[in-house]
Image (cartoon, rainbow, N blue to C red; front, side):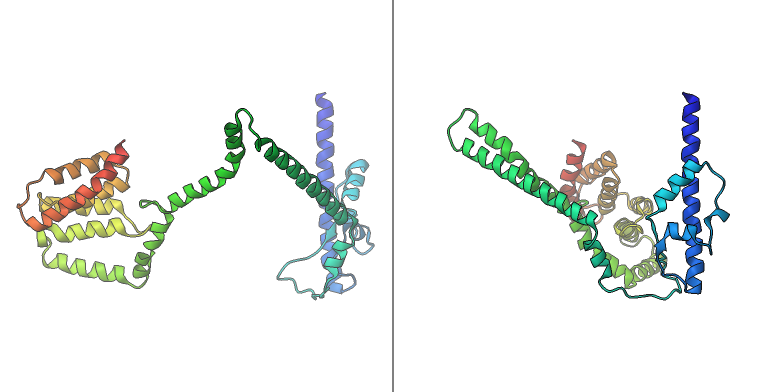
Length: 310
């Protein structure tokens, strides 16, 4: 049994190598003949292999005769053509010849006949079954409602799937529509707005790094968090927002922005702790109106955090 398997394996390998050799010989002969202009651009592999000008035997290894005959039989009707765009061979316009060849091919007409027969049988069967079920459900029968629901379920499935896709598109967190609306940021970056923003923040930081109770570091943190991918850098955003909190331990807006960064990074528990700190903070430590605005932002973000924690 093992010997027979090895014999079949060797025979298959020999057949495959012989077939590749024949095709390689045909391609070589095709290029040689095209350079002399003696044959058309496309010709059969068997004609090239048997040509006196370009013999395939010069490149074929010695294999069993049965393998060689099988390879010759498999390549007898194979068309070898050069479709390289860089080819220097002359191009001959054939007009509608390709269409006439297809329409004259009996295999094509057999395929048409098979397709036509399938359509006739399929449409007729669907019509008969559908009309019969409609007549059946047009009369009072036990379980009519359940049967009707089961029959309509496949038709209802398609709009349900479409509705789910639209829900995903409109998702405010990661829907494609919300992302597309944010492409204005990309346009702003392409117009050099990123460089201008960096220059002004760097200059302001050089003048007074603690200006507005760490407002410059807060702006840096929000800047790195809201850059479009792949320029977004949440690690740098966290560093700057943490530094803003170090400069002003009572800073509420920096905490809200840091909670938003954590929420986008799936660090929901840390985000909730920061929002709780903002909500519990007494107003009036450094800028009462600003602190109230930060607490309002925190209150608006909290439902999203709680929904993720469920």
